[in-house]
Image 1 (cartoon, rainbow, N blue to C red):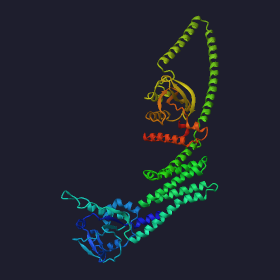
Image 2: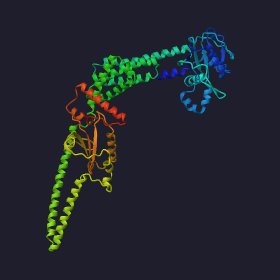
Image 3: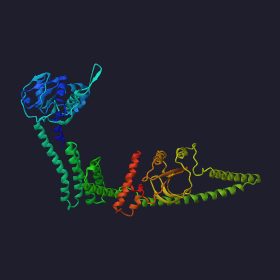
Image 4: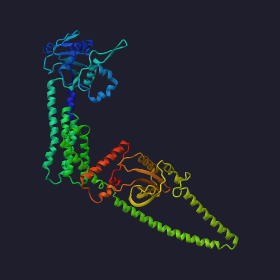
Amino acid sequence: MCRISVLTQRFSNSAEYDLEDVPIEAFIALLVETDHFLVYTHGFEEDGTYIVAPHTLRDRPDSIRRILMEAFHVSEVDEATWMMDIGDHEQEYFEESSYLLVLSPRVRFVWNGMVLMLPIPKWDLELKDNRVRLIADGPQHRLALAKDRFTELFLPIEEDGETLESPLPPLACLVEAQAHLPIVNRELRKINRANNKLAESIVNSVQYVRSALQNATGYQELLENWFGFAADHGAHVQKHMDRPTVLKFNRLLIKLAISWVSFICDDCDPNDRKTFRWAVLALQFTLHRTRRNNILQLPEEQFEMLRQKVASCMTLLISHFDILGARSSLEAKREKERQEELLRQQAAVDRKDEEEELAYLKQLKDDTAYAYTDPIIRTFWEKATHAVKDLEEQRARVGIEQHTIGRVLDEEKLVDRSLVFLAGSASNVSIRWQQGRFIGAGSFGSVYLAVNLDSGSLMAVKEIKFQEIAGLPNLYSQIKDELNVMEMLHHPNIVEYYGIEVHRDKVFIFEEYCQGGSLAALLEHGRIEDEGILQIYTLQMLEGLAYLHSKGVVHRDIKPDSTYI
């Protein structure tokens, strides 16, 4: 098909315009005024066909014969060379782009301009009445330049500082590009029809191959490859078709898309990882074929089948999310319990060490205090000890009153400096809340159920401990960026963000609590068999994603663990 397209382009050296509603006298006068001349052939004029040439061909009769009698020019500049040279020689190419006009007005007119006698053998150009055929001295770019020169005849001109309107509007172009010789056009049409028929046969053959392999073992991969070949070939061929053929062939490709997703849903193993990849390819092709107004052209029964099969295919994709690496809530819970057990063991060891140290210090204190024989020194030691104790109690009391305990941030301290901008966030809140049971674990922390003691409502609280993820670069800026995004999102299918509470060693992020849990937790009990429910879940996910994209946000982590019901 690519070679056929090149062949067609090489022979497409003419365009055709309409003269039906154009005053022939005014058109002839315009040609005379723009230095065109009549080529009298002693033959074509008998059928009411006339040849007109621009002044650039006045002294070039051989060029006139060549343009009129030849449809292919070996010396034509190829596209790459033309694109390379046109920047430097645009004016030269423009001046050299010559053309002939073949008129079929079928009415008498008076030619008052120059006439060139040039005997040329007569043949049937198959030009309809009231048409103008522009024949360029080459295809593609030469034709484009010639059409531009011809169109300029109808543009307003400036004379003595005044703009003079053209007596005629531009002619309507009926055929943008074709070979000016009828026999060449007929042969090209035959070749195009043969290639279009071949393309249709390849697309239609998929159903025959599917029927023939229905009872074979392991035929799915072979048929999938055939679907892919037919889809790629069809998409390539369509680029080189004319508009009527494109519309017809596009309907055939839509049928291929429906058949492809049907094959994925009906013939393939839903638990096979290859099926997931095939489903993605089938849905991509279907989306491309049904874009814009193409889907509106489908009959009702085809549209209904397409809707059902796409929904089934989406169901299959959702069922594979967990296979593709989604971490289930049960697994996260077990990991959390293991970490908590390690922390409890470490805490027990720390308490034992602390108790032993305190016992040693107490014994040391007693031994030291009573080692002093001087009562004055012993009295001073006791007063100093009580003063330190009172100071510690006072510091703790002030901390409680000023709400600084647990989240003391000092800009002078390097460890706190990165947290200052988080604490100054507009979403930083101070609410009374009570932590509840463990819900799950994510990449940066744990999630707990919590109660807002001020409103009595339930919340999900994400706890991020900095000591557990120390060393991660740009961690604080990542948290800040995520919070900025969450603050501007408000949609029924997006988890609502309430605020943040910053502490020295951790951050609490408050979000909407979804009582249904995650999709991963639901899939732990088996696949979702109800297709209607899956369609609802899919629609809600797509609506949420569409909202994110409308806000310029890309999720990049769609999986069952991040999807809540």
